[in-house]
Image (tube, rainbow, N blue to C red; front, side, top):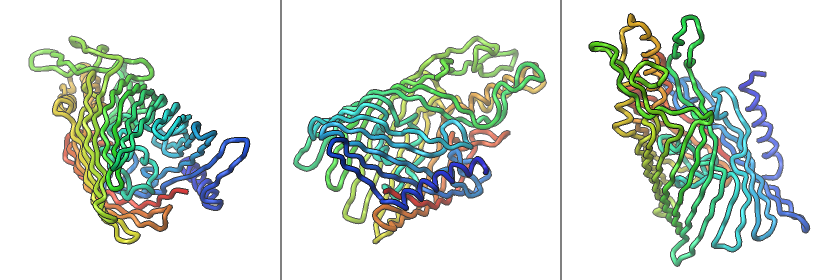
Length: 445
């Protein structure tokens, strides 16, 4: 069997098992915990009108890899105060474009001494954004996918650690105060347009062309305020993230101009290359500020809007950007059409550095030029710059209370974007347009 079909056969088999049995199973034992399980999933089909790959999987032929996911969750209630939750997620692997993986996305123990306090310990999803907890559960929102320009910028929203919540029940609604501290290890993907040649003739390249994955350790601490009424949810949060490569290697802080002769020079990106030397760091820090509102004007009209600022200190290669997203929807019976806009724009500093690295080129006849030119292009490929805007028009169709069918057209304009796998030989900074058509089926049971 083709290796790409194997996870799909497993997913379909598990889905058939879930659909063929009870939609929700619960077992009560007088002397033991009360157990319940649920399941969710999305089968999604996407296709673009461009030959380059967008958002890691979207291409000019139909693919199911971008949006498809399957999850199962087991909840155990040991007593009125103590409970535990485990959620398994089957989806594309974090560290390989052609593999799928089954991993726990939630695995925590919870203690609720009363209705006002909740303490959780283990692996959980931090509510960075309005709909972070719903990210994998497509049935809970009408869009084909939550805005990528917004939800993909944070390094991660899953942490292993401690979360403390305090709920204040006021006359008009509920105010929740969340504080957390945690750590996670993840694989970050980047796209290398061309191989970085070895300085020794005949030897393999230092870095191969194509998708590159590096593991990073992230330590996070932050707080979130959430206000909920019958019609409105408001959320604001502040988060401090410390990031370092898992293998202990250092990160470039900023390229340095290295003159090589009259009228010649290049941007030095490593102390292994000739030049005055560059500063490196083992870790860098990011500050994430986010705010959002979800408001229903009546039973039919709904507006969801979010704004984020991600600031970095320590390396110019990391994300330093503004991002915003908004969706307006209107329900007509079982149909909910919507229009959604999203944008991500990196700071001028990061954008200028990426363009300088990408546009500087030494004459090919100069000794060592292939390596030096390749080092600049490689560093430009790994500089996390986003300057793009998307417009999406679509509709969901609620087949019943537990499943939705969705159809969406999305148009993206990008001047430069890490979400695009730029073909070899093409510059990073170039106006690019892509249209994406998505069809998906989402369910919860």
